[in-house]
Image 1 (tube, rainbow, N blue to C red):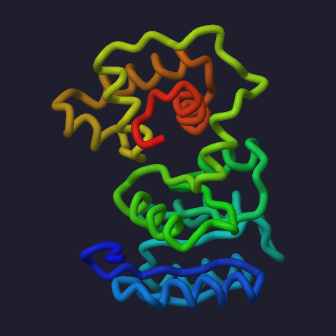
Image 2 (image 1 turned 30 degrees about the horizontal axis):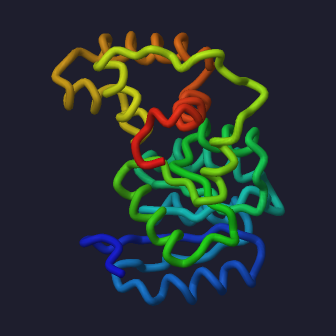
Image 3 (image 1 turned 180 degrees about the vertical axis):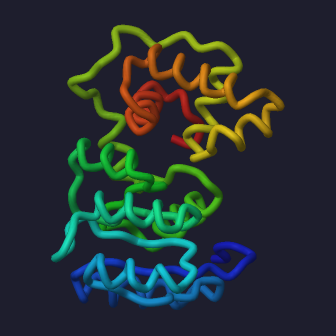
Length: 216
């Protein structure tokens, strides 16, 4: 299964040797993927990232010296182009929301199949939000924060929502749609208000629940 045309430099941050070994065994079959290293502590990976390019990180939520949520934020601050995919046994909505809000491009549970893992890697590297099947089922279940009706969106708002779900930034969206960044920000604020949510992560969750984002 060909993942991407370009060589992808990947790192694994997880404190379970059996998980690291399993991922290494699986990913070594992919000629486009080079595993730069595996790390059991967040600090060790951050030290590595300061001097090395990493395209994608598979990140555990619980580490001996820090939380994956905090480490994700630090990774994106140091290296904004590095794609972070959370890989965890934790399936609480609040954790999924938090790491997305901190810049992760997706969330996978550790029992993910090899095919599913590779598909999620491809999605994330294309700039999309990637969830494993189990996580999709979790976030599409009815939650305590239910909407009385599906928000009515304009055609432009639907376009913006789709681009937001792909992780596009305001300047990129403005260029793609040939409008000003201020116009994009106005649409983003309107989307948050219509869905009655506080941030982009909650917006994506709500839109997925209403099946308003393609690919879910």
